[in-house]
Image (tube, rainbow, N blue to C red; front, side, top):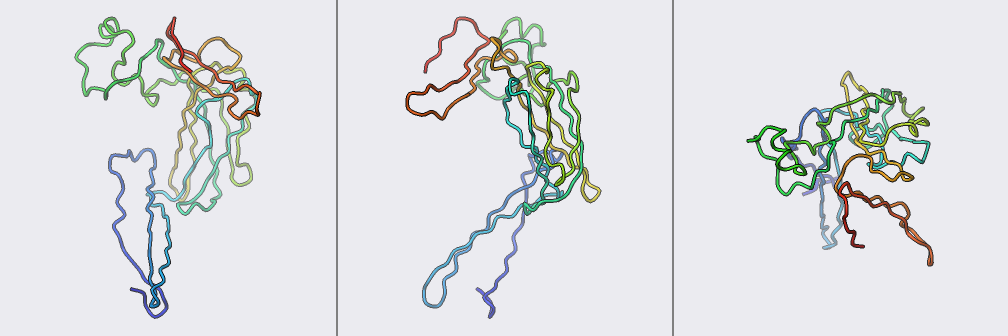
Length: 239
């Protein structure tokens, strides 16, 4: 019930998901919806979305999960906001690294990874060459081979990264790691992506099915364009 000024207050316990790892600086969104009925019976509704986290700064590099090496130039916007989605000035560093992807084709997992492995790695892959051993399909656990680019940002003055030499990078799996700080709290953001070459005849790394839309908006009479591939030989594609 509202007071004489038409205002009201409410309290609630804003608990987060304990299964989310704290190392990823999570924040949680809550939506509050209110319906108010006045003395004439007219009802008005309103809603408010709030975000709650342990750190005020939200660091968001805007990056696609698949990038064509033929583009020659890559622009990565960097958004730095608070929990209310308001811009915050921040400085930080960015590192892009190439990852060691699996060296063989892995079929999609049919169930969750087991808690423990009965067979050692080599005997398992010998008997089941295309099955996933342990967490080999989890890109977050893939080994970093080398750093291919480092840079910095300073929002809002320099709020995007301009990369012009990525045409020389090898196709494969990559990770972008951005680091900044706010109020003496370090904030990190991680983005994984695959670099491919639309002019090449090979996949960026062995994968069971590869599908990338190139041109999906067409005028009558024009042809759409997609990239389709597979690490398996003699496969059929149904369109």
